[in-house]
Amino acid sequence: MNKKLWGGRFSTRTDPLVEQYTSSIAVDYRLARYDVEGSIAHAKMLGRCRIISAAESRTLVGALRRILQRIAAGRWKPDPSAEDIHTQIQQALQRLVGPVAKKLHTARSRNDQVCLDVRLYCRDAVERLTRAIRAAQSSLVAFGWANRQVIIPGYTHLQRAQPVLLAHHLLAYVEMLQRDADRLTGARARIDVLPLGSGALAGTSLPIDRAYVAKLLHFARVSANSMDAVSDRDFALELLAVLSSLAVHLSRLAEDLILWTTEEFGILALDDAVATGSSLMPQKKNPDVLELIRGQAGLIIGRETAFLTMLKGLPLSYNRDMQWDKRLLFEAVEESLSALEVLARLLRRVAVQHGQLPRLMASDALCATDLAEYLVARGVAFAEAHAAVGRLVAYAEGRRRRLGQLRVHELQRFSPRFDRAALALLNPATSVARKRSAGSTNPRLVHAALVRWQRKLKNQ
Ligand code: ARG
Picture 1 (spheres, helix red, strand yellow):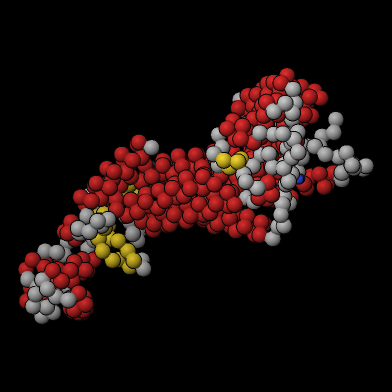
Picture 2: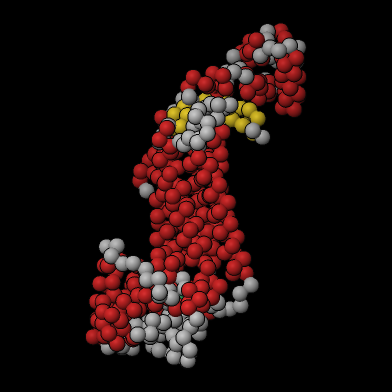
């Protein structure tokens, strides 16, 4: 039996090395399920349009369903000698039903078939990724909720800036992840187009019904141009772009957590179950999981770049270069899923080091901005208030005293508008409580945001 889907015009056997090099089964076996689902819809359509007989159509569909069951039950193995997944499934079908199997590929090319499979894969991937993002968000919200009173220094330029609630910081990532989830929804709309029926590139002279296939496979639309349909992969690229954004968000979160678990910061401690040790230094407890997540962003961004570069010079329409698309896509999707999953797990295994917080919050210069805003509320122009508090900070620093240790009359040397109440502002809890702008770190607003996210994540 010829194991290839082609070969009529060839007189010598393909060089085994060429077979090995061109084979994609080691990667595209992941498309098995989608390939069969697509073929079932295609076989039904061929029968309905009387391109093959109703009996032939039933035979093909019945056998394909058996193959699908085998795949679903995990009783299906990639055959390393097959050129690709389409070939292997065709061979399996042939073994089940004999010569009639040869009618399945009517009005179809692997060019539109592979594109269909990848779109079905992407549609599924969007769903799995959306769920995994939600799980990571839920872990962030749960951790924020459990520690909703905790105040930490907020940083800009990695210098202590202003007090913020830990939960406010965590919710920033919940927002970022939500935008990635929304981007996935946006990408899905462009994935949701049926390419099958485009043939190799020009369409077909056979009377197929593309709308019917689209309906069977739940596609919103059929592609409008057969050459576009088999040539472009921008739907997959868009998914990769979302994954790059997601990877960058996860990487930054990992970096924050890595910093926070150092002895220098000491805000968080990792549970032993999610930390790793050093083979040389017995005292070490390392955040390897977080470092791997941080580093993974490099891989995912690299795959997006590789995909773009692979595609950029290709003439229309299909070119075999495009076979590389799947490895890049599958790896990026699988890695994103595992990063989200392990992160969600880790977030349930970190604890705030409450004993360290007083040391972190000791510098009351964190509240200097509150002093400036206090002056503004008492009629001082902001730039003047800023300058006055700046001089005050320098004065205290020069005398090695904390702002809170200064006397009111000393404050008044820098602005006559200072009074006793100003000194009471030098307190992190007061600082966050006095925030009132929408979206600020005010505890009541953060509380409401936590509740809103809890509800939203439960209802999705
Ligand atoms: N394995 C190929 C791919 O992934 C399938 C399409 C092959 N088409 C072709 N004309 N050789 O792109």
